[in-house]
Image (cartoon, rainbow, N blue to C red):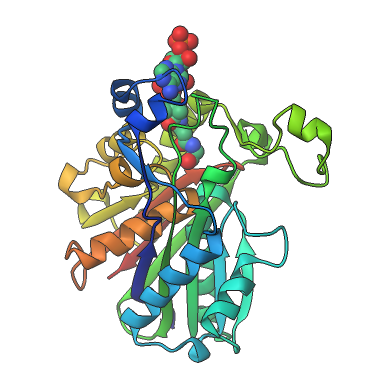
Length: 325
Ligand code: UT7
């Protein structure tokens, strides 16, 4: 028995923020952002829209595709670093919104690697026999923790959510292997200083702008390429596959230069690497499930394809997963 994705869904805000809009906020240019990151525009949540808003919409789309009702779900996992609240979990809010009263619901915090961490967790529960149908969501409203006066980071991020329904399957298709890795010694390369037990809400938090994410982008960049290559190779080798067997790589959409470097190191032609960050920016835990849903709905995935997911993010965390579609 293994987990098989039977439905995908996604939801992004309607509001588009282009590089030209960002140029009005900080000293930057469309040319710099496109050359350094590949991003042209991103979606930004409006007032009254939260992480659970997009998570819920993405979930309903995935459930509809899978033909699964909310009551049938045994588990809901939301990967996010921008939950609606510190607690309860965003997964509990989604559970309430979609009326999935029979599911256990919890969040996973592994930054941009969160979706693969969450999907791997669901797969392990399915393999143990404890869960038959799970809903796994990556959802973020990063625009609320981005410092819109910091040109080093604000150009990168966007909001949205993607979701998959995973069901127990005893056939040949589904999740083959996953590899999860972390190195907490790099925790301060990308983090949110407040609010938390180290920096609870205070005037100091506001004065020092501690409620906005801090990122040493260049250091993260260098570590990302090596780690994502390692994760991809390990997960392929575990299943007895090589890079030549990959039909589609869906990488975390952090930076086009990172994606190109991974594609090159794995020897993949451009058409085997899914890219949509030009339109959505880096949506952290949401980036892979949004890309997966797009790839699925636009006919880029075919039955029997070998699919590789590969990610890297704050923690530091990195992860890869192979599956037969
Ligand atoms: O999601 C997972 C975790 N996050 C990531 O994977 C992010 C990985 N990092 C990146 O994507 C890239 O590091 C960035 C796109 C964030 C930055 O690109 P970079 O090529 O690493 O630029 P840099 O930080 O090395 O900065 C180069 C120069 C600096 O100027 P000097 O010191 O060379 O004069 C920066 O001040 O570019 C300057 N700069 C900018 N210039 C115009 C930094 N941000 C901007 C900007 N517009 N927005």
